[in-house]
Length: 377
Ligand code: NAD
Ligand code: DAU
Image (tube, rainbow, N blue to C red; front, side, top):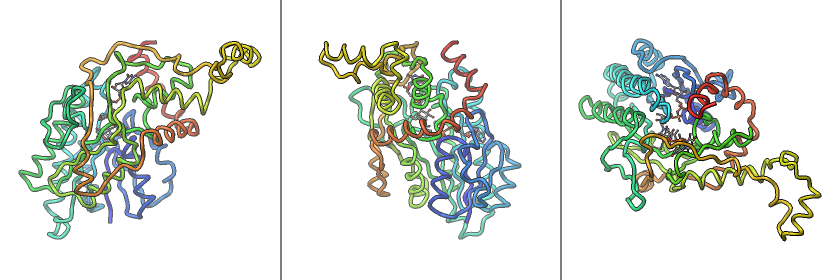
């Protein structure tokens, strides 16, 4: 048995493949274009492992995808490949339309061609699982109910509009051609191998480098955070038992304001990698005197990473709040997240502290160019 997974050199796809092969021996064909966000270092542990076959290709290349499908005869195709960063979609939407809309269309056509020719039994068992986002639903006011699967799509950014378009294509390929599809709409992920253009890894790495921690606008925008391994287990469960043609919301029941997320990271770093007292020019003897005079602990006189927080211009069209109602997935398929935000964010900070090699490999020239463009030199 074989599955074909697209975009698995990226953050979530990479975690998915590592978890998949840790739990079973079913071969994975990993198709990834290796854009700036794709990084084979994430899959280093699989070097020489015959259960993982990597092919560098674009999901929009029908010739290559059709050839791979014919050759490996997968029982499922899981589509993680996408342009995924909202800020990049604002400065350059073209790639988002190309990969997320046109690419998904071409992938669906390649898969439809393959699936149509399968024998009846394989045809019935085949699944196309499309990995999507909660951003397709738009934005919520503070007292609105969380997004359910029946919420109308109201995407607000070029990224979310392109993902919404891809979700509609997937739905239509099921409705019109009978392709056995499943769609998951997930909230914000965080965890190991997260590319440091996104809030959580960016803040961890900027903090350690002594750089500003950029907060867009007032920092009171709310996201629902899910540890990436929980997203992977949800996708496995939907693939295994999801009802064809259905969509499933995936979320962590962890609504947090951005500023609170950044405070949590700073506090964890203060505990795990405190800023040395020499940087402030205040020595331990001086701290002991001051702490006696003020009745505070010497530790509380150490500089904190919170002092690096900097408010910057808001993201245009910034969605105020996302919240996922994941009850359908729990009720129908028995899935629940394993991590709380507190346990997941601690694991994540520890992972970045102990995986500096991965970090230095991804923070290449292209990454630095993006930081200059987005945040100024
Ligand atoms: P990512 O940007 O880290 O990885 C995307 C991967 O897709 C990269 O390896 C890249 O090289 C590859 N890719 C891009 N264009 C391609 C193309 N045309 N052909 C083949 N490969 C291509 O993204 P991610 O955060 O891992 O997100 C994966 C999927 O999950 C996306 O579809 C995204 O919309 C969705 N999603 C992400 C989150 C999140 O919080 N990151 C939440 C919900 C849903
Ligand atoms: O909700 C799911 C989505 O989550 C996924 O579909 C996207 O692929 C993924 O990138 C993520 O989108 P966000 O825009 O929510 O993630 P990001 O990490 O870019 O930003 C999280 C919040 O933090 C958002 O409100 C913007 C804010 N932010 C972000 C950055 C990079 C800042 O305040 N400062 C920053 O420097």
